[in-house]
Length: 141
Image (cartoon, rainbow, N blue to C red):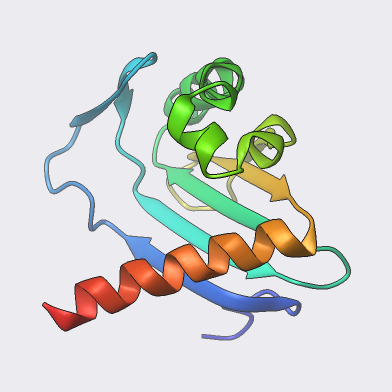
């Protein structure tokens, strides 16, 4: 697929229609209640010009994207002080998370929520190490 990976990404993954096979199925996040399951999730990690994690959540309905965009800033504030986030040294990353809602250019007229987390090189190294360890654990099973 042309332009599937952002030009500055060192890690990129996309899932489409893998999280739910039932229309209208909801995902319950602690502190947010039920939210529509994204139809598409794309994750990219870039190191240049500044390390950044970007997550794109695609929805078939614009209202679903609006609901996620409204709830995510509250979750950011809630999880910035979470003990596991603090112990993992990720509170500063969570505090810098930026949430943006966009109209998706799709035939179904849905919406997209873009979550960007800029970070320092040390924070990026920790996140990439965590991702690598999680992948090794899953691949070993």
